[in-house]
Length: 623
Image 1 (cartoon, helix red, strand yellow):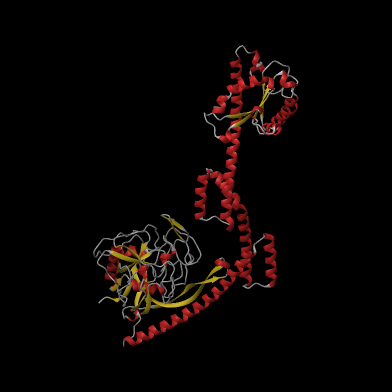
Image 2: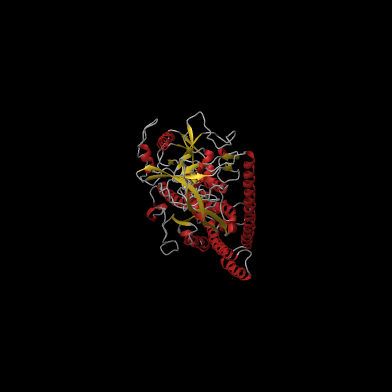
């Protein structure tokens, strides 16, 4: 090992001379040859001539002998004959050498028989154990001894440096561990605490693996406790679900045993009970709120009907009153979702789908080749358009809520299908050409898609020419009124949505580093079908309209406005000077929040995508 010119003090070695006074001159000559190592800070040497006046000789010798790193035994006949050297210094030196506490090096000064001595097996200097006094050039002998001592010192320093590095590493890990334990006292290490630990890791020069090992070890007991707490929570929740809260005495006794088995803290048990009590109160408050909302909605509807009756001497009629349109009744089952919070912290929520029988009227439009367009009668009335400020995941363009009066009209029972589009696209052109098969997902009973607003307007014009009726796109107000069908919830079937009732992306979607959940308002996640479905796959709303949520977005007549300030209140389309148009209803491709009754999507009138479709409206015969 190459020794630097200046060693740091904590690595410098203490060297002890054990010698006979008769060899003092040779000791001094050897010390001179070692002076370069002293200057370099490799060693600091000591012998008994350095004992100051008044100091206790034996204590000083014993203290330096027992703290020396290298002990030089200067061998001669006088050294071996010395009782003090033999009984005290040699004995102590060999004991420390055997214990690995010091390096003992015999230095052969003068020729003597030392073959049966305690140090006979040790590597001696100079080379070949040739006595220094026997060398022709004594300086060569001492230089050889100095080189041997330098080599031994180098090995000792390297070992000491390794121990020092290990000690520093252990101290750094201990300091890092102490800080990690303080942060993990609550069972986890927060983001801010992680950043502090990262800074401390760099300061202490710990590797990522070393820091990770410490953190894993620190968090291990908390992880086991958390697992046990989760097991306790699950059983607690099941008991609450089955028996309600508060629990009976038998259940409490069983939970006490479970707490003792898993060693769950009393504070955590108290927290779970507090949450269960809060959940019970929340459920009761929710039930009362829903009852009040239903009563308020019924009051508002009664008031609107009363107001409508007084505002006009001619009552709002139903659309089937037109003499040229003959309607037929039909029955159908509509669905509603009831959310039940039965578990602790929402863990036990269930979603029950209830179905009820409804009736409506419709007429059939024979487009030819057994392709029928069915139009449902939408009764006139008033409703509150837009979403309330407390509706989850709402957008600002859904405000302000405002009352709108809707005249009776007809609306397509389904989004326009590919078979219907193909027939109408073959009719005489009015303004622009139409592709008879534009859809990406083929199927005669699937909704037509990849159609722009401009193409849909052409479709309505051709259909009107063929039938003599006024077919058009619904206004946004008409669409939302028809979608809600008398409801005020985010979806016509309730507060949430499920892929059992509509076709949308029911799985989580990580898009451009943003996660769009596959569920809405604590509702269930579902499936992502990745395509359109036939238009009669799901239950209709209370007006008898199918696929009003999901499958394909539906073009409306209106232009774009950033909110409902100054919006019409008569249900008419609200046009704009730009080329942007509105779509409603959500689609197979997007997350559930876009399927809400109040959600508005803006796109250029010339845009056409595989999730854009439409359904037609009709106000009666053309005049």
